[in-house]
Length: 478
Ligand SMILES: [Zn+2]
Image (cartoon, helix red, strand yellow):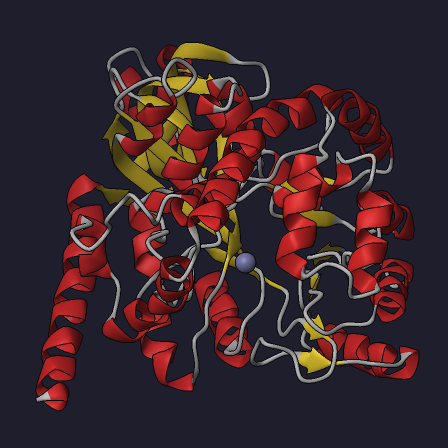
């Protein structure tokens, strides 16, 4: 029985245990575009156990670690819905070293959109889930589906329905989170068969759609997400089908067809088409920052980018492919790329207006020059706001839409009871200025608290590792 004299210890004894208690936080509610001041958040294991006004909730919990978030803003961890781990078996170590970098930039989940080291990615997915590897939660497509002898390495080559069925069996055995399909050499009818077959099996798909098929047709087949905004420019051309047919007939090269989609884009037509696509339930990953970087390689020199210190020499070497390709461009091709990017900025708010869910994704990883893991997602969100999205819409694309696409909305997408304890603590309000997502004071990663010093150490360790790889590469070159 408690006496008045023992009141304080009695209350303490009645307190519930929490692993982490965040106090005096201003909660960012992305869904409702609002903030709630002076909240406490109790975290147990990898889950948010409770939250509420600090005055009452803080009395209910005794925590192993208390974090004072006075004057700080708390929001869900960020999702990068388009990354790649790849570049060959010899780059497995360099790819693995990217995982803590994502965390240091507040990215707590990534969707790996296929490459050539899937076995390693699937192993990391388990290790992160088990807590034995520091990294974002990984969702992966495993190896992607392509036609015979494609440009891309590490793909599953399919040319018949039976081969698609066998590939999907194999991917399901690997427990992939979705299926990625690209169009380099894949026959259009096999593309459509694969999308439909995956849908029948209840697996989400993500794709580069063959020019022979309209985006609306792919959406009718059940395609889950369109990767890269240029495919929505294609969908916004009233001549989409006939330009596609001319490409198939060999009357236009891929690049010429792509330019024709831009030239014939019609805002009035696109508006109607986007509302049809919205009804078909398709998602879009714009990868706008990547388009911007590639479009302006002619005038922006990235050789002095500080983030290069975090990229291993092997990965950095893969950057050269796009730089060399861009360097060979004619002035007309450079102009066309600029025009396409400028049009992309206009298309993004049209997609928003149509209600098409937007997935924030970077395309960071190998090959995609100067689009840096972690940092790139903040750049991507900045591009969205430059294009006319509100900060709230940009934040939703990186916190709410990703879990919704993958069917994990119950566990992610908000700071709420029962949700995953993937939490960012920021110095400023990201609903007012999207750049506030860069002002990270600390991250709760799967329930573990990492303060700024711990995040800086992840970056310092990654830099030291890259410096030693660079030294060795320089020695080998001598
Ligand atoms: Zn990609």
